[in-house]
Amino acid sequence: MSIRVAVAGSTGRMGRVLIEEVLADNALALSAALERSSHPLLGRDPGDWVGVNTQVKISEVSAKELKNTDVLIDFTRPEATLAHLALCREQQVAMVIGTTGFTASEKEAIQEASRSIAIMMAPNMSVGVNVTLSLLDLAARLLTEGFDVEITEAHHRHKVDAPSGTALRLGEVIAKARGVTLSDVALYGRQGMMGERDPNTIGFATVRGGDVVGDHTVSFLGDGERVEITHKASGRDTFAKGALTAAKFLQGKPAGLYDMEDVLGLKALRDLLSGFQR
Image (cartoon, rainbow, N blue to C red):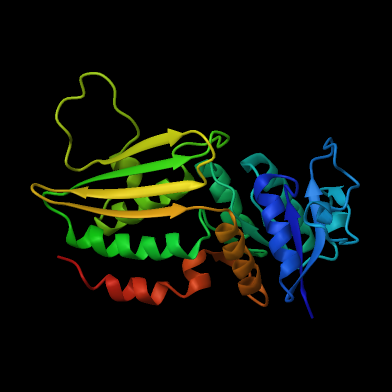
């Protein structure tokens, strides 16, 4: 039996890619294509832009639209995602959250909801990025004294949050590996007479423009050498495929908050790498 998938923000850049990938996967069935109540495309078939008749109509988000759904995939905005979360909790629908830009209190609300339903939340669902996180954990443990850390990220002109959720996650992994909290060491920009660099900080630089899907580079800068770990996404399909893998992963899972390390089985590797500390 196919897993019934609903897509929030179904007419957006990511939503359209998600729907195309759902329709191409025989293990999945599109149960709902959701949009805000004022959207001009309500009532249209979401398969129109890929030449497929889905017999699903783009609809306003409601409990009714989620009744025949196993999992909702949401790459929208924090306020919308939290509203969808309440409906999913009410209808006992699992949720894949790719939205970024949540505040600390909003993350706590998601954590609370995960006591009732299975939720997979990650700022980046590509396999490559999540392997990169494991590589960074090892690098951060070995490249310690004498190595400064800088994170540079670039995205398209339409992205509304900065730094990106992925960049922040990269920083969190590095900070944890070094035994500190990111909020205590992050530096989100430089201007004017800053003085010498604090060796304990993790610097962030943000670039916005054009149609860049997502580039992230972490630099470990020492005296006489530099190590750089880079991930570049050339299309949104890599994020969509990861989200669909997560949707399949959640089937039959108990209530809880999962991440892509759970989905990809990377936690065992992370535990192994944690033994390599200088």
